[in-house]
Image: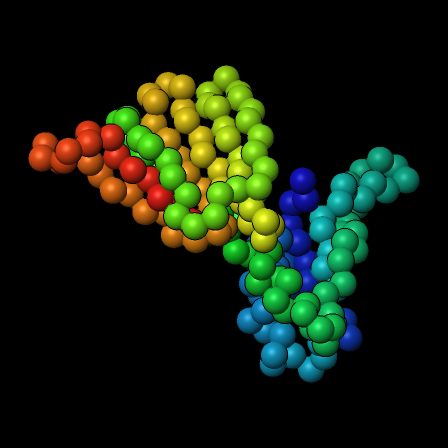
Length: 171
């Protein structure tokens, strides 16, 4: 994993050192519209430079990417990389739940497990994904989706509900 990152732009006349790739992308998107040119060279810190006598000769950086904001869709690609993979998330405490699809059901499903949780991953015809994780330690759920809002109808905490099972509507 690289340490510091370097961005060079304006034909190499300007450079900035940033902490991580996320900072690089945010910087390029913020400065890009005002820069003299659309090309940004991104370098990651590589191993230290060793001199012939074995002593430390400083830092070296390796070119890892060239971002050209004049390319169609390049700025949107950077924005998409900065977005969380699942913009819709819901954490559910221990309670009985029934999961239902709001619209069309998924076209593909796969189940996996680790020592800490079981996971069901549902793919939809449009390429979107919904993930349901059940944590073994406390029985809680974490639902993640890039498809749409997740709705909770909390019947478990309603003493007057005819059905004591809470319903989670997945988009």
